[in-house]
Image (tube, rainbow over all chains, first blue to last red; front, top):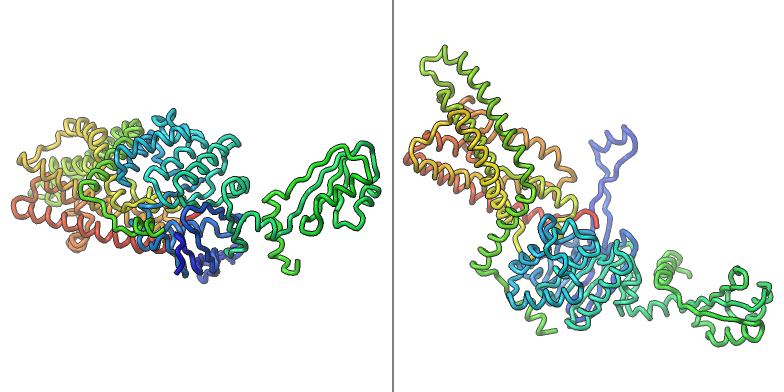
Length: 338
Length: 288
């Protein structure tokens, strides 16, 4: 048995759905003989996460992210498979387990809606039996990092989404959990609020060595926070490894933008890189775009032949954004030949 | 790792004093929550007074026509002043024990909010029980007392036959609160299994006041109905506490009524825990 904190083996979860038939007759038939269908939301998922790691868990809508997270937090019982976190089975030892974890579900708050924020914190203090001195120290830290002091005495329903999310993060961490589950912690936030949340997560990751699993739609979260990503699609793990490996696996596509001094026909420009695997796109005036793959040709070589052929005013090389990398992963799965 | 695993695996139990502190805090929070919406209850005082007034005239008319034929001046074992008192006390009691746990729980399950309850190290059932107590504490002060101030002098409500009876009636209504909220809780648990329990909740709304004896005293019903009801918990929500107030149960009979009521409260709480366990096993948290 390995030593990892979180161990997931063969995790599977089915949902039973009733499929509706069309029209009035269909509706009547449904009453007598409903059509049941089994949807496998999570299919044989396995991974391990060592203590202190921050892992991004990504996938499209309905890929099975949230279902996995619900099983890891002990809310949902799996159809089959095993999960242990530090030796505990989440859904079987719920009271014991939830004592040591924190969770934020971005779309719903765990604060008491009608009451002042501070009442929720006081309640959490009692729920987790946090000592007064520890409570004070934690609240100071949260105030410093998340700046929540100004609205502690306001009812939760009057907070903005960004303020509420900061409070929710603080609420999830008040008792110093060793494992933190974040389900879309930046959903619906503006750029500044997102940055605040990320900054805070970086801080607790580095300082407290909290093990964090994060699901998100905003891949910038992953890029800025996680070294490791797990990609799930249709309930199955499609990739599990370093973010850098992910780029390599899809190919290190690079996008090149070139500004020329004078107007040059596309064909002429394309000729300069003849023999190299570079793909030119349609130009916008004197600005031209090209794509090539680093695993096939070095960037320097492309630029060298380019500069030799035409008058280049300026050029810019950008790595493929993570969104596109993920999209390519999905595409590869659909066309196995590629 | 091993140190962390040891920390996770160390058995953890909330001490008795910590439990008291925690659950008392839930009572307090529920009280504060309802205080924020207190204006809603001012209209309640008016509507409860209207209910009682309606019953007052119905029974007055009923007695005027029926009593002429009977020699005792009683209907279903109650005289007209007793009847009016029955109606008033049962509505006053209802203003205290009433809550909407079933609806709240169903909403939490349907909208997926139950997830944030399940990731906390507490028993959701116990928490909801104490929230219900907090709600009733609020109701007692802001709803039941104002209603009593209006109704008692308005309809010349009889005082209890013996000062201790006030205490026993209150104790009985407190046990009624536990029974009522546990039945409600189990009904709410149906939301785990059914997509939509609005129909069930509406059926409950209609039948509950009837089954508990708020609308009509059981003595008006045929013998077989009373026998069936005596094996069910519903009469302990309203009929039993109100008849205690009327002095219909005294001495050993009073003791027995309270003990059976206590047994129902404890039994339903345990059953509620079982129902909760089975329901959570099959939980499908919707959305998100």
